[in-house]
Image (cartoon, rainbow over the protein chains, first blue to last red):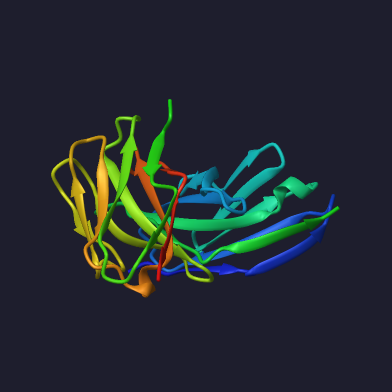
Length: 113
Length: 112
């Protein structure tokens, strides 16, 4: 089955800095890669996703890049703000079968004012 | 639209008691899921239902049962609660492949 590794487990940055979270996956059949943000005590929420036919996608201060050859994808947050502090999860979904995503274990991002 | 609604939000059970976690979605999605979230373990899939009338085991199904009552509702039952089932439980719905999940607000369950 699919295996998703996410790094780092904890990331601490100063407000205004950039933050990068990286994920690798093992199954070359995976073709959908969502990212979720979970604030303390809240539900995970989808913030951005990318499909395998696209190499990069941006939405304001967040962007995701995908390298299918190397089987890795990354979340980039620019000009970080304290409200970006949360746990971020990556996931990889296969193109067939039940489309069940495999989640990474999460990255706790702390943005210091 | 409420999206995905879970009840209850909090519950304390004694070992051996049973309970049902309720989940309902108003997005007309086919697929629904139950996850548990434990510190350092991320999200682990308990059971899922790809469509009305079907259910399948996920990564950690032992000690749980599910019912897909109709397209809107997907419930999770603990027949005999154990302390190892202390966790936060999330229900989610998905519109299809290449679409992300919409999660419910979660149920924080403590088994003593």
